[in-house]
Length: 220
Image (tube, rainbow, N blue to C red; front, side, top):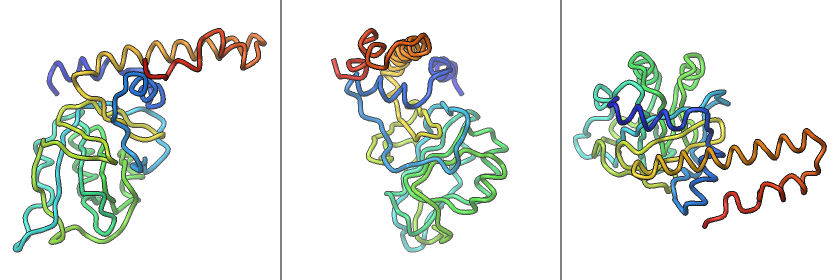
């Protein structure tokens, strides 16, 4: 991972997808990866630059399905666009094992995975549309690497910042990452003050009104 990548990732330390989502809403930014969900209720938050892969239907003879992984850097989030297909997988136990050994941060798939027990046992973070056992070999092939892809209707460009946790996945445009992180921290600080006021005995309405809760996520 390059130094700038590390700096951008560090900006999101301590944040989660709800806070980042609110900031993106207020800034009018897309990036919510609809219907792409965590394989497990991961306790932590994964943040990393996107390494993107685009799959298409296989040619005759079929092309490669997975050699790109040797080019993914430690700490990257592997982002795979399989055109929302749920009839065949692009990720299984060997990919899980290898990604874990290479310390890839997580894999996000607009499609499905298989060999779920391996990912759960290894605690390797996977975010997908679901699971299905049917192989993608001879059905799909890699069309491009580090190209723009679509993940749950969100456009993701290589090195965008991916934020993912038990709530789902967000793709933060790299050029706006600093702005998003800064605003997310302000929103989280306001919500922390609301929680503190509730602990002190204020009603929810009083606490929210004092902190301007209803405008926190509203687009300026």
